[in-house]
Amino acid sequence: MVKKTVTAASAVLMCAAAFSACGSDDGSSGKDGEIVMGFAQVGAESGWRTANTDSIKASAEAAGIELKFSDAQQKQENQIQAIRSYIQQKVDVIAFSPVVETGWDAVLQEAKAANIPVILTDRAVDSEDTSLYETFLGSDFVLEGEKAGEWLVENAADSDVDGDGDINVVQLEGTTGAAPAIDRAEGFASAIEADSSISVSASQTGDFTRDGGKQVMESFLNADKSIDVVFAHNDDMGLGAIEAIEAAGLEPGKDIKIITVDAVKDGMTALSEGKINFIVECNPLLGDQLMELAKKVVAGEEVPERVVTEETTFTQEQATEVLADRKY
Ligand code: GZL
Ligand code: ZN
Image (tube, rainbow, N blue to C red; front, side, top):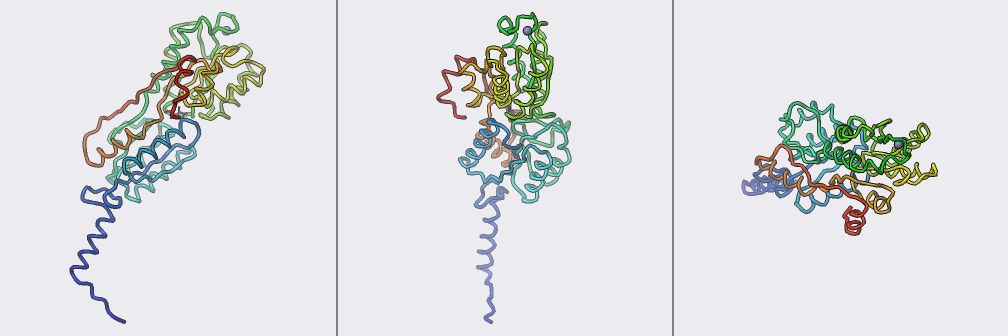
């Protein structure tokens, strides 16, 4: 057997090749210095989530960031498992949207101990220890709830549909324990305090899904014949409520007013048709901002502790105007 002697020169070449394959001197671990990001996504529960995932994948591609991506089917234990696998793979940065606010300290401590920076996107955690993540990129959900409540107060005159003097609201809540569900309910409740004729008579989670919204709305309709308004924490549950309202022989948007949050295509279409009356936008297109933050974080640069996304609201007329060129 010819014994191969490895000359010093080729040893250096081999080592250099090995080194470049495992990242350049800025510590990024991707091939030829590419940053590697581990992203633990909530799931694919809604049109918003799908648009959010598409944005993250497209922006990673455009930014030259190698993306490892996981879908947790809305289960916290799956997200925690994904984050642990990213730690083992020694990615350069971890980003995720926590499905619920609580229960993250342990795994975030593990990421910190492994010197892997974490960026929160979309949803927040309730951890007191803000050293566990570099920044939070996402919407102000309390403000979204306030915008929904303020519209109802401004439109109270037309919202007591059954004319009994009370504006009876039923609420379709997002995932129990999720920041958008907690905060949208809080913002809405504070805004409607301005008009004592408005009250929430029933509130239940539809888990941000169309089917969840439909099932809960069916139960609300069976229990109460004097519902004036539905406030749904996202378009998908609002669209499910429309199905239930129509199945009950009522006209959504007229017999029962509907206010939702997100402004995804299907929601905006229903709004332009008058089946939904008002939508508060929640911007899912976080990808570009996330990738810019990741580059800064990996390079050790300062980043703001919170980056709030731009978003607006839509009436039926406004939805009709913009529907054609909505990207999601
Ligand atoms: C809000 C996001 C919510 C959306 C829902 O930023 O977390 O989760 O409003 C989605 O559509 O399911
Ligand atoms: Zn009424």
